[in-house]
Each structure stands twice: as structure tokens, then as C-alpha cells.
Image (cartoon, rainbow, N blue to C red; front, side, top):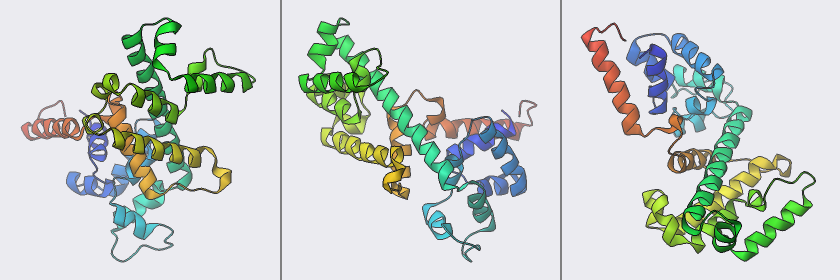
Length: 253
């Protein structure tokens, strides 16, 4: 495991570049050089770095022209470098896209498993009639229509499909949703509201700090196959393995 790998894992665990620098006994500039390389490679995102810094520190530095006295120089310099709102919104768009694509695929696959692959099965028996009609209208209004009407389902449509067939979907969802249908529906509605803000910036809406955190957390819950969203336990174990190797003087470090 390389130094870059360790930096990556620690940021994913929530350690800021300043903490990583002190842990590794190197300068902030050294750590940020690794971070810059990983952002350039698409391995890390700017928002990953920004959200590694505590919320109260981010709030104190928001719009600050000079470093607040109770904020460390490392955190302030990191936020100045990576805290650009445009980049953060781009990362939120990617989170929303990832969640929506994943849900869209999951719902379709579960319906096919339960009702069969022919249109008379998963589409007509699995998708409520009103949603099917709405999707057909959306497709007719599209000048370059997608192959099938299911492509025109939105987040709220998917939520209604899941609700209509809760018995077959509950076991496919994260544990906290499986026992609480209301929480899932509320989160879908909130996510859809955030999506409208991000997709329609000319309307004047701006995502809040809580919106960013909510979307990032939901992606981790709903897209478990994403290798960039390993659980904290898995990430921590990888760091521990590295430290064990480093302590042994292994040439693999």
C-alpha cells in the first residue's frame, strides 16, 4: 500500500489533510500534493476533502477573507484550496446521478425477478398504471425518445413503485429503511427536492450544507457496490493493515 493509498483511506475515514500531515509528520503541502494527484485521477473528489473538515470549522470559514482565530492554518488553507462551491455542486450532481441510476436499475431488476421479464410481467404488473401512463406521455413529448417508457420514471415514481410492492423491496433496502417505510419515502421526497435545486440553478435555489451531507450519506447507503463507498470498518481495517506493515518495516509499505 502506497502513501497515496493511506492518504486516500484516511480522508475517506474523515481525517482532514491537516490531521493526516501531523499523523505522518510531513508538511501540509506534501499531503495536498497527494490529494491534488488523486483528484486529477478522479480517485478523490474535492467534496471528499472539504467534508473531512468538521462542520463547525467549515461554517466559520465560509466567506471569510482571513483565517478565523480559532481555526487551524491547515484547515483554513485546505478549505481555501478545495472549498469552491461550483466544484462541490458538481460532486453533488454526481452523487444524485449515481443514486438515481442505481435505484432505477435495482427497481427494474427486482420487478423482473418477481413478475417476469416480458412487458406483461414486470412493467404491467409491477409498475402502477398511473405511473405507466405518465411515462408514456413523457416519452411522447421527448423529441429524441429513449427506448422504453421506464426510462422516464423519476425518483418519486420509483418511491411509489417500491411502496406499492413493499413486501418484495423491503429486503433489498438498507436495514434502517426495511423497518421504516415512512423514512424511505421522506428521504426520497427530500432527495427529489435537492435534485430540483441542483438541476435548475436559474430558479435561485442553493443547496445547503445539510443537503450536501444528506446526499453523500444516502449515496453510501443506497449504492453499496461503489468501491469509493466502502464502510468505515472496511476502510479502518485497511489503514490498520498498513500501520502493521509499517511497524514491521515491510518493504511492501
